[in-house]
Length: 67
Image 1 (tube, rainbow, N blue to C red):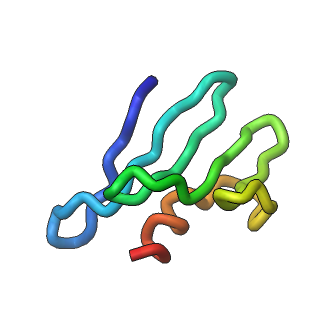
Image 2: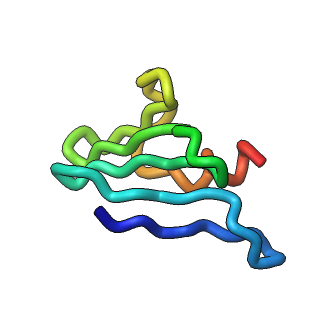
């Protein structure tokens, strides 16, 4: 599974987006705590408790909002 690091303007890692099975993705903070999930089949982003929070993929926004 591929993992992409997300960095702030000072090039510090603030989180990760990891590819999962079936094309799904999950967002994690810098300490690997799960922030949310994206499912391309439904085109919905969910928080860590699986509540729908947006249409489309806004995982990077979850990471930036969490800092």
